[in-house]
Length: 486
Image (cartoon, rainbow, N blue to C red; front, top):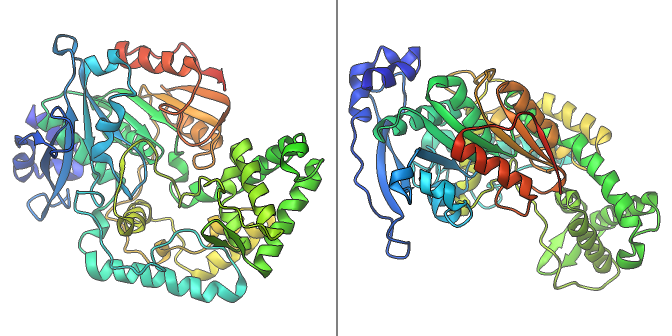
């Protein structure tokens, strides 16, 4: 069992079998997570190598959790869970949030296993000592502020390198997948099943590529296209935002009597851009916030959800007219890509360092020349006015320490069930289709007209439940791809 597990950790680590055995033979000490959580929600610590190429070197501790299968006689195995991110979410709490959402037939058969991936939550989190201004995500491009954007990106990378330099090259999705395989062995399982949302779909896909003989039933909700990780994952959103804007403006125009934003789609779009221009001149006061035109553009993910987007822009129009709304809806405005799926929110200062740690080190394709970002951001701002520059502008990845290995090329026949909303602002439909294509043995359940990020656990058609429950309890995928109507 141990010899097989060592071999599965990749050729680079197989030769280091003796020092790795100490990790594979661990026996976690399970205890109640804390006095405020149910007694059946247990937590433990798991040691793993920081660098799998040198497993006799430094180790780190991972936080893991479990809720045992409720019907031991029907138990099938373990269901590892990841709610997304990366960064900003304590995934170790995911089983606690999902034990009420999963059907009893699934809870009867699986131990629900949570874990904080390396670099975040309670698993050797990356702390960079960033100020509040430095701890941010996408930045709008303007020629006069670009030099400041470069300084910000360099400063964040330098601060993280100075505080966490020995750790950063090893905070990668590939190493988290290896951690999952150590956990599999420690739990005494030949294979694992898995439920991952958003970034969790990429982690799951990487695991299937690295350990194809260890995968059982994988549900991947709101797919990240492995071929686009990571910069292209953001820039892909730009044309999707324009499509959503057109759809939203048509829907809103048909309801002009309610929202008063214009009686034609063209009028609605003009109203929106007039508000952006006005907010650039004089920021709008909405509730307890002061919003510039760039702030309004950063919130246009709300337009993917028709009613929410219309209510949001109507509030902005009131604010522009001198009324200060106090009940403005809070739109979905995540840094890239969003976490989802009922993990507990970690300390705010952990979010962006945890995010940059993974997306910067995962791949060696980030441009290193700031001028490339200047060119791309200016080009995409002209092509895609809503979001193009926000997606293409410079990030700390331009100056980040190189990861320990290249990104994973995912191309396999692993069985998986992919869930995808048609109108998802964070992992667009085209991204989910890319994941489906990369995993040739997968099936997709698409929710036509489905809005928002995350399908399972949010309001969704019954056919989603049927497909997921059947797959998890029997291992049977749908005969073909399925389209459900929202």
